Length: 292
Image 1 (cartoon, rainbow, N blue to C red):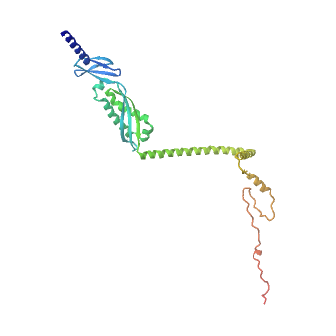
Image 2 (image 1 turned 30 degrees about the horizontal axis):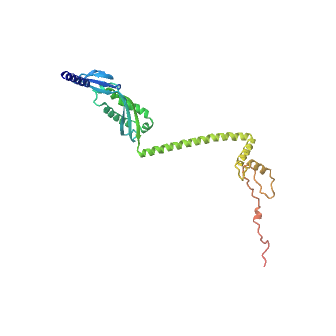
Image 3 (image 1 turned 180 degrees about the horizontal axis):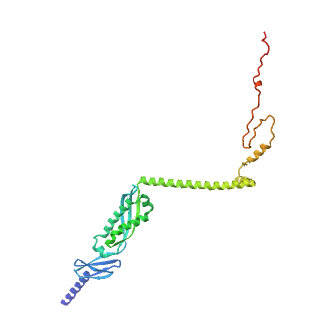
């Protein structure tokens, strides 16, 4: 019984020693060993780590990339617009010794630096940059956060602005501006089309002026297009040149007022007939003396 008791006691003491002196470090972790409160220079890698009971204490540091959302921050841009911006920060530990010794809570420290940097970026930027030029702002925000984080053994991998919340009045103003811009583009496109169409019509008019038969062919084509619609009424355009030709060839009728000479395009001007002034003033007055 005594031997069995001694063996059992030895096994219990061995298990206790293993429990207090052996630690398992995962692949994505690194171990920092404190011996009587003083940090050891060697950083323990993944696997089994043997410690001295009572003397050593192991602290594990995670090397994975950490995703930390930055709370939305209110600020005023350079062009005096109140906005609310939130972001997200991706970072990882590159120096476990500094993270364990130099800073008490590196995650909280990175969060505070990210909030202050985001407010600073809002104050230095304009509204258009926050809405359309986010890549440059993300790079500037990353540099502002990474500068103090390197002293803590942390590397900022990426920073992105998630959302920009605008007041309702500013949203309506931006909508009106966009609508006005689209209307301006539509007018410019319409005017450009009119200009191109007028140039083509001018070339067509010159061609038809040089070749009168082209005008007749165009007239016949128009008649065919109108007749294809199965209309009961067909309107035929009458050439103005034919009317002028018939007007020049028609003989002058008797009693018709004479027109003044001029161009064909000028309207006829009637010539007033000459009436002698003596006849106009003639009266039936007796020449001799008065009768009784």
